[in-house]
Image (cartoon, rainbow, N blue to C red; front, side):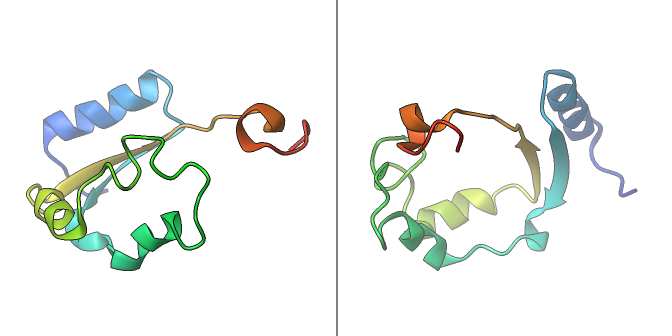
Length: 96
């Protein structure tokens, strides 16, 4: 197992303790950042486009994002599984 700074490993462990299903630390160099990923929000248009601060057009443009992203060589990623019933959020069937 790769050795990471103690504080980052403590944050990873804390994320798991407070409910993250998974938490991993990766080097920024291990990740591929695609400019085309942003286009998935508007080609075809997502019905939630612009409704969240995490979505375009509210988030950083690609060059600024890269500056921020690569300003720290290590990243902590967490995943939390959330189950929702369809109709209220997705507009689908109740069982979806």
